[in-house]
Image 1 (cartoon, rainbow, N blue to C red):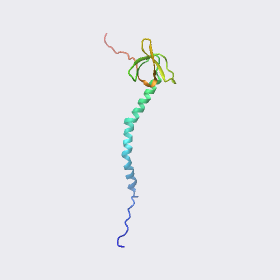
Image 2 (image 1 turned 120 degrees about the horizontal axis):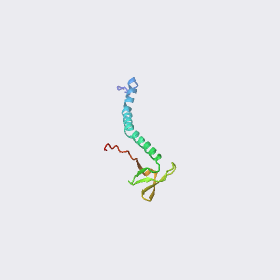
Image 3 (image 1 turned 45 degrees about the vertical axis):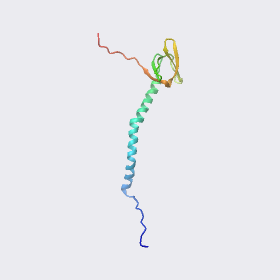
Image 4 (image 1 turned 135 degrees about the vertical axis):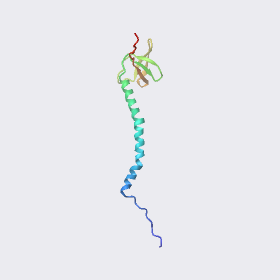
Length: 114
C-alpha cells in the first residue's frame, strides 16, 4: 500500500485549555451584563415593593394597579391578602395587597415666600 493512514493530531498542548476558556468567556460576559442590567435591578425593585407593602399603615394613601386612589382604613395584618381602602366618603372597598402599586407620602412644602 502506497498511502499511509493519516491520523488527526491531538490539540493537547498548553494553549488548548486557554482556547477552551476563550470560547466560554463571551458567554460569561453576556451573563454578567444581563445580571447587572436586568436581573439585579428587578430583584431590588421587588424587594422594595415587598417592604413597601409590609409597611402599610392606617391612613396611608395608596394607588392600586387600576389607578384607584384611596386611604387605608383598616391596619392590615401581615398574613392578610386583602386591605380595606376608603375611596370616597363612607365608600370602602377591599383590594388585594398585590394590586397596590404605590404609596403616596405627603411631602412638606419648601416654600420660601413670606
